[in-house]
Image 1 (spheres, rainbow, N blue to C red):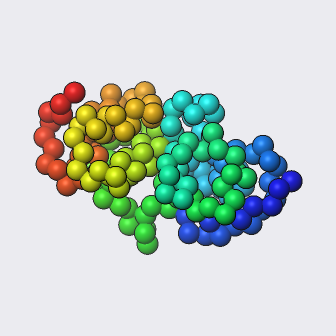
Image 2 (tube, rainbow, N blue to C red):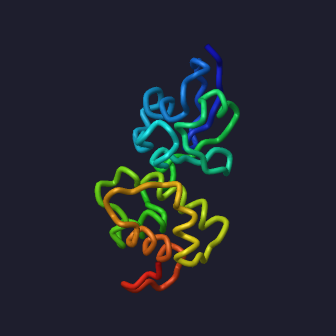
Length: 160
């Protein structure tokens, strides 16, 4: 067992973990933060995307011991005092989700994009989200949601 200290969504935790425990499983099974789904366990789908010290990572490809001393933000940690962020509202208002399985990863990846590029084009949104898979939406409404969260007026037509 390895002792780790990690701050997740603003709360400090200390735990003894097996060195092979994935961060995704630590978040879900040890901390009960089930808002970070495990879609593929191979880092292909992006559903488990979280922020570790300002870097967006797929938590199924990071060991919990690698997060020792780090600050982790999950989709559950974005809302403040029960209030969604503009990005979360945009996903809801623009129907950027259907089954919702990919939504946490999409929101975390889009959040990272908007930090780096506050006013992306639709092509830049698509490129930033290409590591996140969705089987339901066809991506159009996800792109609209990210553009709307950036403050851009978005009509029905989103360029490919």
